[in-house]
Image (cartoon, rainbow, N blue to C red; front, side):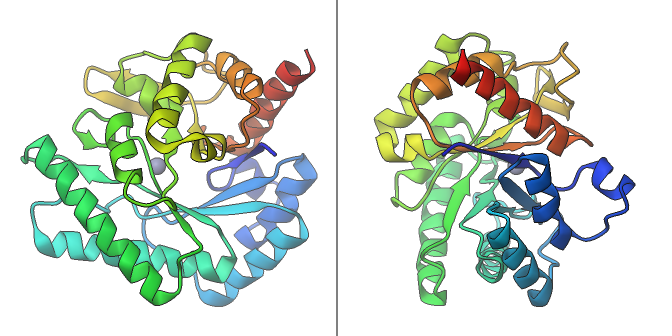
Length: 284
Ligand SMILES: [Zn+2]
Protein backbone atom coordinates (compact mmCIF):
# COMPACT_ATOMS: atom_id res chain seq x y z
CA UNK A 1 0.00 0.00 0.00
CA UNK A 2 0.96 3.63 -0.45
CA UNK A 3 1.44 5.54 2.81
CA UNK A 4 1.35 9.24 3.63
CA UNK A 5 2.58 11.09 6.71
CA UNK A 6 4.48 14.11 8.01
CA UNK A 7 8.13 14.90 8.68
CA UNK A 8 7.97 15.90 12.34
CA UNK A 9 5.09 17.53 14.19
CA UNK A 10 2.65 20.10 12.80
CA UNK A 11 2.04 23.34 14.70
CA UNK A 12 -1.58 22.21 15.10
CA UNK A 13 -0.45 19.16 17.11
CA UNK A 14 0.91 21.48 19.82
CA UNK A 15 -1.95 24.01 19.44
CA UNK A 16 -4.38 21.18 20.24
CA UNK A 17 -2.57 20.64 23.55
CA UNK A 18 -0.38 17.66 22.69
CA UNK A 19 3.27 17.79 23.69
CA UNK A 20 4.96 14.41 23.12
CA UNK A 21 5.84 12.60 19.91
CA UNK A 22 4.59 9.44 21.67
CA UNK A 23 1.11 10.88 21.02
CA UNK A 24 1.79 11.37 17.29
CA UNK A 25 0.90 7.86 16.00
CA UNK A 26 -2.61 8.04 17.51
CA UNK A 27 -3.05 11.62 16.34
CA UNK A 28 -1.99 10.74 12.78
CA UNK A 29 -4.23 7.67 12.68
CA UNK A 30 -7.23 9.79 13.71
CA UNK A 31 -6.46 12.13 10.79
CA UNK A 32 -6.31 9.26 8.30
CA UNK A 33 -2.51 9.13 7.88
CA UNK A 34 -0.27 6.04 8.06
CA UNK A 35 3.40 7.15 8.21
CA UNK A 36 5.57 9.35 10.44
CA UNK A 37 9.17 10.47 10.00
CA UNK A 38 10.65 11.30 13.39
CA UNK A 39 13.18 14.12 13.17
CA UNK A 40 16.71 13.71 14.52
CA UNK A 41 18.07 16.40 12.18
CA UNK A 42 19.73 18.26 15.06
CA UNK A 43 21.03 15.11 16.75
CA UNK A 44 19.79 11.78 18.09
CA UNK A 45 18.55 12.86 21.51
CA UNK A 46 15.56 10.56 22.02
CA UNK A 47 15.79 8.25 25.04
CA UNK A 48 15.15 4.54 24.80
CA UNK A 49 11.91 4.43 26.89
CA UNK A 50 10.34 7.22 24.79
CA UNK A 51 11.39 5.55 21.56
CA UNK A 52 9.94 2.22 22.69
CA UNK A 53 6.64 3.87 23.71
CA UNK A 54 6.42 5.58 20.34
CA UNK A 55 7.06 2.26 18.62
CA UNK A 56 4.27 0.60 20.63
CA UNK A 57 1.85 3.38 19.69
CA UNK A 58 2.87 3.14 16.03
CA UNK A 59 2.19 -0.62 16.05
CA UNK A 60 -1.24 -0.13 17.66
CA UNK A 61 -2.20 2.54 15.10
CA UNK A 62 -0.48 1.01 12.04
CA UNK A 63 1.85 3.97 11.49
CA UNK A 64 5.00 3.24 9.44
CA UNK A 65 7.94 4.83 11.27
CA UNK A 66 11.13 6.23 9.81
CA UNK A 67 13.76 8.56 11.28
CA UNK A 68 15.57 11.48 9.66
CA UNK A 69 19.27 11.23 10.64
CA UNK A 70 21.30 14.36 11.64
CA UNK A 71 21.74 17.00 8.92
CA UNK A 72 25.45 17.44 9.65
CA UNK A 73 26.38 13.96 8.41
CA UNK A 74 28.96 14.22 5.61
CA UNK A 75 30.14 10.91 4.18
CA UNK A 76 32.38 12.85 1.77
CA UNK A 77 34.21 15.15 4.20
CA UNK A 78 37.88 15.75 3.38
CA UNK A 79 38.57 15.15 7.07
CA UNK A 80 38.77 11.54 8.15
CA UNK A 81 37.62 12.44 11.66
CA UNK A 82 34.40 14.00 10.32
CA UNK A 83 33.74 10.93 8.17
CA UNK A 84 34.20 8.68 11.22
CA UNK A 85 31.84 10.88 13.27
CA UNK A 86 29.29 10.74 10.46
CA UNK A 87 29.38 6.94 10.60
CA UNK A 88 28.73 7.19 14.34
CA UNK A 89 25.67 9.43 13.81
CA UNK A 90 24.20 6.91 11.38
CA UNK A 91 24.73 4.07 13.85
CA UNK A 92 23.12 6.20 16.61
CA UNK A 93 20.12 6.80 14.35
CA UNK A 94 19.89 3.07 13.61
CA UNK A 95 19.93 2.35 17.37
CA UNK A 96 17.00 4.73 17.91
CA UNK A 97 15.22 3.13 14.95
CA UNK A 98 15.70 -0.31 16.49
CA UNK A 99 14.14 0.86 19.79
CA UNK A 100 11.21 2.31 17.86
CA UNK A 101 10.78 -0.53 15.43
CA UNK A 102 11.35 1.97 12.59
CA UNK A 103 12.30 0.23 9.37
CA UNK A 104 13.97 3.12 7.51
CA UNK A 105 16.33 5.99 8.26
CA UNK A 106 16.83 8.92 5.87
CA UNK A 107 20.42 10.14 5.52
CA UNK A 108 21.85 13.21 3.74
CA UNK A 109 25.00 11.98 1.93
CA UNK A 110 26.94 15.24 2.44
CA UNK A 111 28.49 18.02 0.41
CA UNK A 112 31.35 18.45 -2.07
CA UNK A 113 33.16 21.13 -0.09
CA UNK A 114 36.34 21.95 -1.93
CA UNK A 115 36.84 18.43 -3.23
CA UNK A 116 36.27 17.01 -6.66
CA UNK A 117 32.75 15.62 -7.21
CA UNK A 118 34.07 12.22 -8.24
CA UNK A 119 36.29 11.99 -5.14
CA UNK A 120 33.30 12.95 -2.98
CA UNK A 121 31.10 10.21 -4.45
CA UNK A 122 33.82 7.54 -4.33
CA UNK A 123 34.55 8.43 -0.70
CA UNK A 124 30.87 8.37 0.24
CA UNK A 125 30.47 4.94 -1.41
CA UNK A 126 33.37 3.59 0.63
CA UNK A 127 32.22 5.12 3.92
CA UNK A 128 28.66 3.90 3.39
CA UNK A 129 30.03 0.40 2.85
CA UNK A 130 31.83 0.66 6.19
CA UNK A 131 28.60 1.85 7.85
CA UNK A 132 26.76 -1.21 6.50
CA UNK A 133 29.40 -3.53 7.97
CA UNK A 134 29.12 -1.77 11.35
CA UNK A 135 25.33 -1.90 11.17
CA UNK A 136 25.48 -5.65 10.55
CA UNK A 137 27.88 -6.15 13.46
CA UNK A 138 25.54 -4.17 15.73
CA UNK A 139 22.46 -6.17 14.67
CA UNK A 140 20.75 -3.47 12.55
CA UNK A 141 20.73 -5.36 9.23
CA UNK A 142 16.94 -5.17 8.96
CA UNK A 143 16.76 -1.36 8.96
CA UNK A 144 17.07 0.30 5.54
CA UNK A 145 19.42 3.25 5.20
CA UNK A 146 17.86 5.66 2.68
CA UNK A 147 20.30 8.20 1.13
CA UNK A 148 18.41 11.34 0.11
CA UNK A 149 18.50 13.48 -3.04
CA UNK A 150 19.50 16.99 -1.89
CA UNK A 151 18.38 20.40 -3.11
CA UNK A 152 21.53 22.54 -3.07
CA UNK A 153 23.81 22.35 -6.07
CA UNK A 154 26.94 22.11 -3.85
CA UNK A 155 25.58 19.06 -2.00
CA UNK A 156 26.43 15.46 -2.80
CA UNK A 157 22.95 14.22 -3.64
CA UNK A 158 21.92 14.43 -7.29
CA UNK A 159 19.60 11.63 -8.42
CA UNK A 160 22.50 9.92 -10.21
CA UNK A 161 24.73 10.15 -7.13
CA UNK A 162 22.06 8.76 -4.81
CA UNK A 163 21.49 5.85 -7.19
CA UNK A 164 25.26 5.16 -7.28
CA UNK A 165 25.24 5.06 -3.47
CA UNK A 166 22.23 2.73 -3.34
CA UNK A 167 23.75 0.38 -5.90
CA UNK A 168 26.29 -0.99 -3.40
CA UNK A 169 23.77 -2.95 -1.33
CA UNK A 170 20.21 -4.13 -1.89
CA UNK A 171 19.04 -2.86 1.47
CA UNK A 172 19.73 0.77 0.50
CA UNK A 173 16.52 2.47 -0.62
CA UNK A 174 16.73 5.94 -2.15
CA UNK A 175 14.89 8.81 -0.47
CA UNK A 176 13.60 10.66 -3.50
CA UNK A 177 12.86 14.21 -2.37
CA UNK A 178 10.88 15.54 -5.32
CA UNK A 179 11.06 19.13 -4.07
CA UNK A 180 14.85 18.83 -3.93
CA UNK A 181 15.06 17.28 -7.42
CA UNK A 182 12.84 20.06 -8.77
CA UNK A 183 14.92 22.91 -7.31
CA UNK A 184 18.28 21.29 -8.03
CA UNK A 185 17.14 21.17 -11.63
CA UNK A 186 16.01 24.83 -11.31
CA UNK A 187 12.35 23.89 -11.73
CA UNK A 188 12.64 20.71 -13.80
CA UNK A 189 9.65 18.62 -12.61
CA UNK A 190 6.47 19.86 -14.22
CA UNK A 191 4.70 17.18 -16.23
CA UNK A 192 3.88 13.51 -15.67
CA UNK A 193 6.58 12.75 -18.25
CA UNK A 194 9.17 14.54 -16.08
CA UNK A 195 8.31 12.28 -13.12
CA UNK A 196 8.22 9.20 -15.40
CA UNK A 197 11.79 9.96 -16.46
CA UNK A 198 12.90 10.00 -12.80
CA UNK A 199 11.25 6.63 -12.18
CA UNK A 200 12.76 5.14 -15.34
CA UNK A 201 16.25 6.15 -14.18
CA UNK A 202 15.70 4.61 -10.73
CA UNK A 203 14.35 1.36 -12.21
CA UNK A 204 17.25 1.07 -14.62
CA UNK A 205 19.84 1.27 -11.83
CA UNK A 206 18.07 -0.33 -8.85
CA UNK A 207 15.38 -2.54 -10.40
CA UNK A 208 11.61 -2.68 -10.03
CA UNK A 209 11.33 -3.78 -6.38
CA UNK A 210 13.13 -0.75 -4.97
CA UNK A 211 11.34 1.54 -7.41
CA UNK A 212 7.98 0.24 -6.21
CA UNK A 213 8.87 0.70 -2.52
CA UNK A 214 10.63 4.07 -2.67
CA UNK A 215 10.97 6.40 0.27
CA UNK A 216 9.79 9.87 -0.82
CA UNK A 217 9.77 13.41 0.51
CA UNK A 218 7.48 16.03 -0.96
CA UNK A 219 7.04 19.77 -0.47
CA UNK A 220 6.95 22.95 -2.52
CA UNK A 221 10.37 24.64 -2.37
CA UNK A 222 11.60 28.09 -3.32
CA UNK A 223 14.93 28.15 -5.13
CA UNK A 224 17.74 30.39 -6.36
CA UNK A 225 20.49 29.64 -8.89
CA UNK A 226 22.22 27.68 -6.05
CA UNK A 227 19.18 25.42 -5.65
CA UNK A 228 17.07 25.02 -2.50
CA UNK A 229 16.15 28.16 -0.55
CA UNK A 230 13.07 27.48 1.59
CA UNK A 231 10.28 24.94 2.12
CA UNK A 232 6.71 26.24 1.71
CA UNK A 233 3.22 24.70 2.00
CA UNK A 234 0.90 23.18 -0.62
CA UNK A 235 -1.08 26.46 -0.66
CA UNK A 236 2.02 28.39 -1.77
CA UNK A 237 1.33 27.54 -5.39
CA UNK A 238 3.89 30.02 -6.76
CA UNK A 239 6.50 27.39 -5.84
CA UNK A 240 6.77 23.93 -7.38
CA UNK A 241 6.55 21.09 -7.83
CA UNK A 242 2.85 20.19 -8.14
CA UNK A 243 1.81 16.85 -6.71
CA UNK A 244 -0.94 16.13 -9.27
CA UNK A 245 1.30 14.84 -12.12
CA UNK A 246 3.30 12.78 -9.62
CA UNK A 247 0.10 11.25 -8.19
CA UNK A 248 -0.94 10.34 -11.72
CA UNK A 249 2.30 8.43 -12.31
CA UNK A 250 2.30 6.78 -8.85
CA UNK A 251 -1.18 5.43 -9.53
CA UNK A 252 -0.49 4.41 -13.12
CA UNK A 253 2.60 2.42 -12.08
CA UNK A 254 0.86 0.86 -9.03
CA UNK A 255 3.68 2.10 -6.81
CA UNK A 256 3.71 1.60 -3.04
CA UNK A 257 6.04 4.27 -1.67
CA UNK A 258 6.09 5.94 1.73
CA UNK A 259 5.45 9.64 1.08
CA UNK A 260 6.61 12.03 3.77
CA UNK A 261 5.39 15.61 3.51
CA UNK A 262 7.95 18.25 4.48
CA UNK A 263 5.75 21.36 4.21
CA UNK A 264 6.68 23.97 6.79
CA UNK A 265 4.43 24.13 9.92
CA UNK A 266 1.47 22.14 8.49
CA UNK A 267 3.15 18.96 7.29
CA UNK A 268 0.45 16.61 8.62
CA UNK A 269 -2.41 18.62 7.08
CA UNK A 270 -0.52 18.76 3.78
CA UNK A 271 0.28 15.03 3.92
CA UNK A 272 -3.47 14.45 4.14
CA UNK A 273 -4.00 16.76 1.17
CA UNK A 274 -1.41 14.74 -0.81
CA UNK A 275 -3.35 11.60 0.08
CA UNK A 276 -6.58 13.19 -1.15
CA UNK A 277 -4.96 14.23 -4.44
CA UNK A 278 -3.73 10.65 -4.89
CA UNK A 279 -7.16 9.18 -4.06
CA UNK A 280 -8.82 11.49 -6.56
CA UNK A 281 -6.37 10.23 -9.18
CA UNK A 282 -7.04 6.61 -8.18
CA UNK A 283 -10.82 7.08 -8.25
CA UNK A 284 -11.00 9.06 -11.45
ZN1 LIG B 1 16.27 15.46 4.34
